[in-house]
Image 1 (cartoon, rainbow, N blue to C red):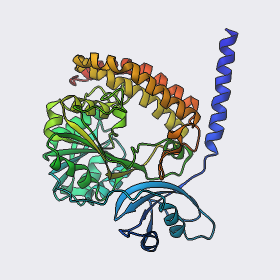
Image 2 (spheres, rainbow, N blue to C red):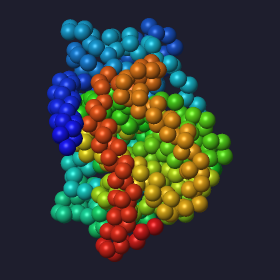
Image 3 (cartoon, one colour):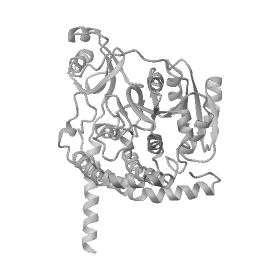
Image 4 (cartoon, rainbow, N blue to C red):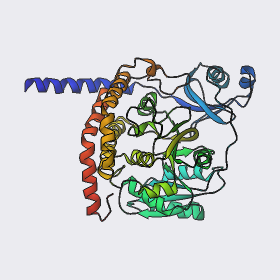
Length: 445
């Protein structure tokens, strides 16, 4: 018993030290640097245009997280230090020369018609910012549907009807849960493709076109995902999360095909978190409807805590459809701001991961042999990733030139423990969510 108390006391001391270190993390400015379409370094430096990130003030001296574009297209990120009195554009353009040039933009097919679904709950200020960016999209044929999930007030309805009129459709979903809200949006849209994003993003003007155009080029494509970058890095929580990768998946397009499983994904297709995130995803509408949409017992707002997007990815891949990650489809995400937020997020990620796996096996038990066959390789892969995150050693800890995943701050063990605890809870949370859904008059898958 005394040994248990000592262990708990040591854990508490370790957590206090981690929080003290966490609070010393400084803010980082966010900016965009467009190098134009020049062919030489000097030509690029002269044509470079530096802009602050969404909602950020003009760039000054200090640390700057920069999205680098060429001819308007994202090609990489870098973390630069602008000396006092120096020209930020010249300093950051010099650093950007080290980035790979990327493939020149080729012809892009006309995108199919699209519906954008934004689920929200009592966050009218954030929602307005997101809707303003969505209405500025360059896509030629799209609609926006706001799903007000289990509202307590009429604030969201009033905002949509007063400020956006007929440009945005309002739908109310009384049953709480992100997947339930997304399913309501899926039923409401009319486009060939349905795109989903969150109420805490700012979408790049090209976002929807870049996210949906691949469907016109590939009839077997069932899903696309895109790039998610931080809108702000003002608090220690935002900086810590982004220094460990945030939500971004890099700047190299990639297609996942169930007929040709990737050799570097030992748990494919069950490592759905590698494919993208729910704040930036689109599906061929008919395909997502055919698989029944998202499992309503998953997602934020349910006892499962998350996993709805991962469930959708795997269900589409299990139908033999391809999934494509396209970094040109960019949204800026407002990360959570406090240590407590990170604790909640870590636990929710762990719970959502195992909840979605439970949902897959409950709804598609025929996939169990495939999952079991991948477990040994998947566990070894997970151990390697965990070791890198904990120690900051190895090639992955350094990141590619311009990589966002620099791991400049150690990942607190407290957050890792919470994520593991969430993973243990996930299956229980999912089953509880199914029971709660039935009690509320909803329908479990």
